[in-house]
Length: 341
Image (cartoon, rainbow, N blue to C red; front, side):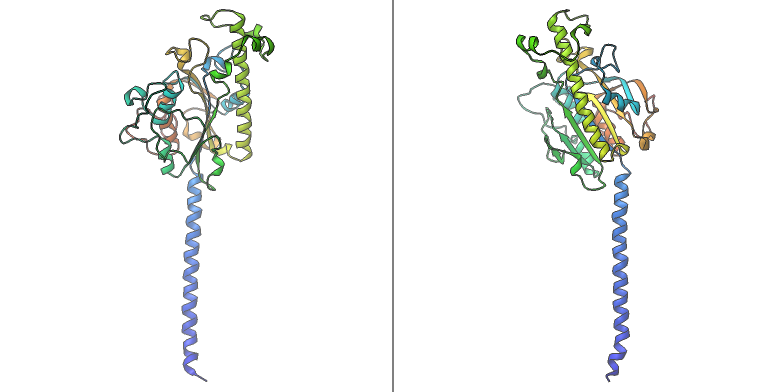
């Protein structure tokens, strides 16, 4: 018998044993690291924007008597905050949305013209705010209207189309998603005399009280009734979207912002720098898990003024992302924000 082999076997065994033990330790460290990364993702809230087009706060019952009831939005308010004084910084889409995406005053950065011949570059040293969320590990999606007066870079959205969805993110990855509903857009209020006579509205024209600066005519009453109907349809679409979010088990981890992008479409609102052109509804649903990040109790109303230039900074602050100095707005929700602020 070769005694040298007998001597070598124990040494070989210990080398293999040590190697396997080291491999197990490395593997356990790897698994633990992944687990920790997963926890970090879950420790940041999701943020959802639900946007309706061309509707000021004056058409919602939660703001004005005679407005339309929107049960889905009102449901968000029960566990959230109603902002009584939220303002778009443009009475038309492109200017308002340019302010939202940049956190800057449009006239300061050359984005104040609706339907520009040429888009403006973003200010030096500043990106559209979802870029900073992506850098921090968020999955960012927009479905689907953009309408920016800026040149958009390639690193703003993970997806921006009518198929974009938060559902395509990695497991445990926090998301920022924008869901646009164009049901209340002015284009839906175009109708012929024949259509007016043949298509009865669900909302009674007799129940409509025209605004003091509108004539009390059949056309105005019909238009206002149809506008109420469109709000109800928009609310139904919002309800379906929220039902899906709840089915995905995400309501407990998601701040939901509902707002209109600027004033309504009846004369004297959209396109006019009047109060009715820029005073928009804003409701923010606050999940109980994250109520420590808001300055008031859920179910409250706030009289303080907020504006679109503040929305981007607020999202960044809620996500724990540093707000760029180049932004003009200030956060109104998040750690350290008080009601007075």
